[in-house]
Length: 128
Image 1: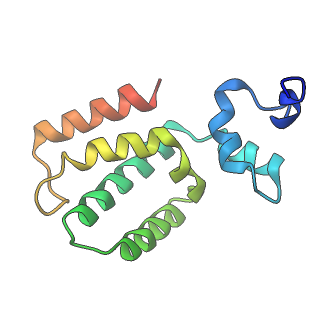
Image 2: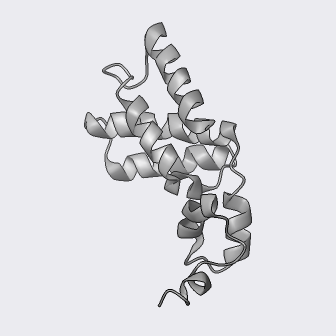
């Protein structure tokens, strides 16, 4: 079995791109999917993470439904021209969960100290 393992992961996928391989595994255009998902910029990740964090806060507080949150995320990402596959990136999910707890009760307004904490988390976790 171990001699066939290299055949399971395409040659063009580097070890740090395994997450992208998981995203694209069932895509019709695997190579195109790899190319478009390997190059998410910091700003795309930060924008998606911020929006997702806000949606997670709203859903947790039952201010919107999961369906409404998913629609809002699709609309926001579309408006920013960010592929929806960015939401499958585990760092985006992980950081969004963290920052979702920094929002105030209405999930929109934040005090300055929380904004600074959010910026630090985004920089520390998405830039590495």
